[in-house]
Image: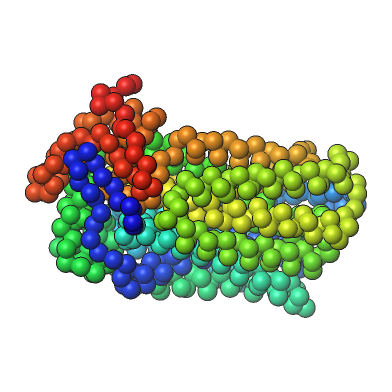
Length: 544
Ligand code: BGC
């Protein structure tokens, strides 16, 4: 079915009229720049904390110990928990901030969360660039974290709500594309500032975070609110006008009625946080937790944070290490573009499954190549060709992540929550993501020292688990209108048991009252998914 549509048993083909307008494209482009601040931070910290001038100024004891470290064991590099805590404090701040962002996003609209995120990040960047002591650095990092928490909470939801269903994947992945561009830009900047004589290069790296922050802060002021959020806050007329504008047609009755019904239903929910634990939201809650968890245990941030350290460990010189980090950064950007053009055609599941297999194969190969040379003692040396082969497999691994778990780790959660729990659900996704980003950043060097080459097998094991999880438990969501997603869960062989016909009826009745779709009251018994696959919905009586 071209473009992707969703058909329920009443025979309603739920595919709204309208096209992708220039207006929607531009608003999504501006909103996606919220990803730049997250990406910039991921890319900048590792490089800055390895600059001697930065370390000797703020962490003299760490600097001394690092210089005294003469160990030749390639697996067990000097590990300072103090330094990594400083770096990853940002992720803890983001974790907490995303819960506050949930309220702002729901009560004031998505754009004010983005604006708040941008401005806090801007102040954080200024403090860090001008830092005189550790206190200034830490306060700065906390502010950066708050900025990331707010942006990551609101941007993916904004994009998924603005986009027409059949192009939602493409527009949402703009966010991940901006993350990867932020990481690459940071790597390039570090490469340049590390060469600045006089020891103030780190200031330039940290202060330049103000550029992406300025872009999203200013940009958000020009952004319109999403129709979903306008209805949620009682601005029905504005919502109707906005919907006409973003869909480029006056024929928005069906979509508007669905949004309105979703909003009416959401008004019956007074406590999103308590309600998200309700049985009928179980599938979404599990996904909100497991998807970001799995995204982090792919091990991607070992490469993103530690590429220079890792490449140095593998016997590259320090310039060559930074260069290799730039190569993986480029692969990350270009492979993300691949997902932009395939996600709404192939669907989410195919990308997840293909990317998972590719990452797993690379992890096994990389682990084995390292085992052959370094064994368990960690003593050894790579030839240029051997090191080149490892970098090549790291690039293939990064590409696999960049068109699967990278973008889909943000896209899928943002499109599966019904309106009444959307902000709360997205906060859970952000906080789980930040928590495991923090844990992996914190534990990586200690894990490498203990697990040695087995670290790659460790992450490979998780990739295997998540690939099976997707195969069995994630239904395809491509092309399904965001407010119709309940039907997808109801039709799933496993999740269907958590959602009763009554749960679906509530929505259908509301649609009926709204004068829409005469047949919609019939409970859907059959789903026709975009890839032409038909599946019988779970038995009408819920099996508990
Ligand atoms: C993840 C980050 C990761 C980045 C790499 C994002 O989707 O959330 O943790 O560093 O992708 O491109």
